[in-house]
Image (cartoon, rainbow, N blue to C red):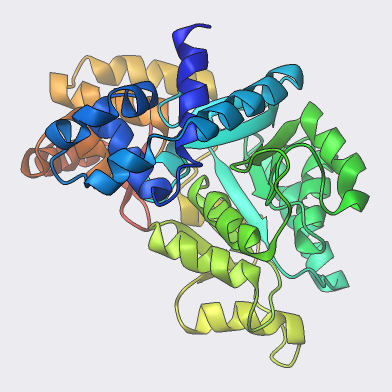
Length: 374
């Protein structure tokens, strides 16, 4: 067994230790350097991470968790499922910025979860003709304006499944985030669409095989949907529902949120209208509106962008080039994430970002995200 396989097994095991949680698990990995040492050197934890309690050290003496993780590793290996630990390059970088991001994700598919443009489309399970038509027209137009966008949703009834199907119809990659393990598809009637998505997109979950699609798992799933994307788009929603939770999570992650309006008396437009009225979502009328609001300038073709980059790099300082390289690799980031990635003090990075703005290299998007322009 190589070190990568060991890290995957111990990362999975860490998710099963009682009382640790997502935030605690990442804190342990950060303090020890990897999940393997969290378990094997657990007695050294109080010295390496002073605030760690004796209770945590005792909880990590958990051979049954390691054994179960080994079984899960065999399952994913046999089924050609990718196990993405928190520091893997393929782990969604946008999600990594979120405090409660999972330590481990399981992915089956063939798309890049770190695509340059990633959106999620969510809404009611009781989609009307109005909602399904919006899904169709929005993604058809978005394909023309932004042909490399990744579309994320939850494979649920209603708007979710229509978003996936319309993405496939327009040859856009689409990922379904599941509230259960990859040993099943729920609802089963969406199985064919799920299989089609493996050819252009995929299926993603934090849950191990054998996990039932229990109600609380759907709420947990929504934070992944919100966190791995640049923007959340709500198509139709009643006054209460999972899509409003996703919108709230997107706001808490400082991501952009948009909603299509509806008639004031329509049951499944009340949630969208409420989001817009309370300024928790921007009013959305078309794909063109959306692309402009996000600052996704698609007028420059990739080869031209590359030439612009090469010419700009000659005029940038070392620190400026470092920031550009990080944004180029990871996509849009907030200043706090840039401080961590670049290891540059916040007071200094503010000045660097200002200079890059003046040079036309970056711009600030809604939510304080910095985007590389060229």
